[in-house]
Image (cartoon, rainbow, N blue to C red; front, side, top):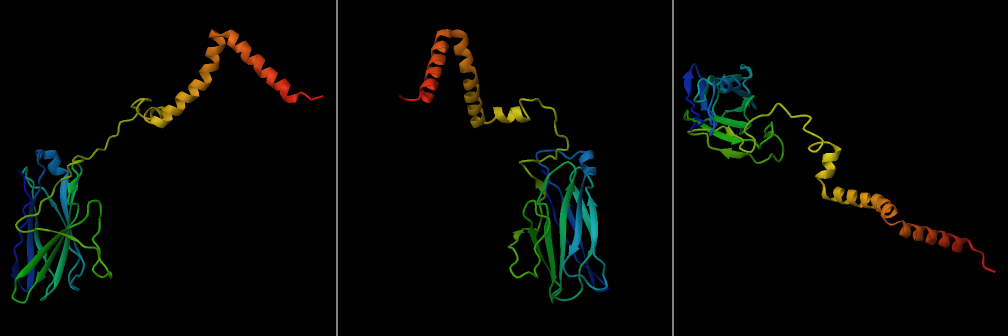
Length: 229
């Protein structure tokens, strides 16, 4: 079974703190092939507060082997005590629908030199995380990032479908299919057919009854327009 392993290590060099992020993709119960390795990658982007002398960090990590491992190296954090650095990691795949679709990671450097880390996952289908600057930000769902973060398949729809079958037949799609697949439409159709077919049936199989019905109709018309003496 493949697991997502998230490890970070702090390197203090000339007052610059850098981290390494390693991971592994879990596609159980499927196997990772060479094609799927090339079609899957992970994107890291810095958000929130950024040091003035540092550019916005963006990086792409590709899966390195059939075990699904990937790695971000030498990712710099904001310098300073009680400074927070935020990154968003998102999986990108042409073959799989993966979850969580966004992971927010926060690093906070304390006075004693230790670095505190927290992780949150976004709601499925939502691209951005709410800003802390708004008055009532949404509550984020926390996830464990130590010792690992798991990127897994969306089990209801694990594979992405790019081809859609067309011309599947008039009984499967189109206006006729919509009538056949609806009970109330079928009921209305049955009533309409009965109204149309019943007079034809009577005229062909019971001419005497048709003759009596016509005579009665004519008599009713004469009585309607008859002027009393």
